[in-house]
Amino acid sequence: MTAMLVERVILLLFVLGRGGPATVDFDTFAQCEAARPQLVAVYQDMTGNEVFARCVALKLPAK
Image (cartoon, rainbow, N blue to C red; front, side, top):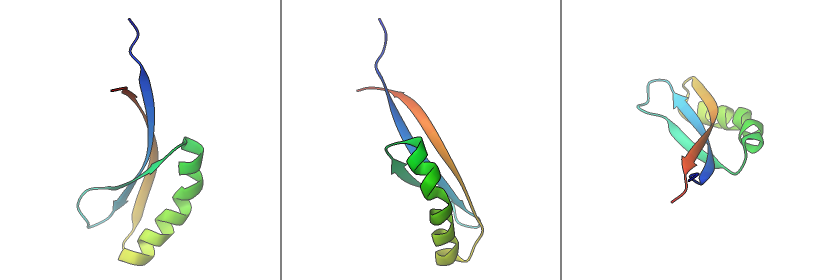
């Protein structure tokens, strides 16, 4: 029996000096990568802190 998998794509935003990461959901990895530079710039402007970001694609079991 093969389990059904769904892909979830998220952008993890780590703002230095601010707890855990913020996450943003996307439909595709390409959308995430395209939006990443702009979202990093916006979070840096909002917080004044350095921001690190990474797109992650997770393969999860379907409910």
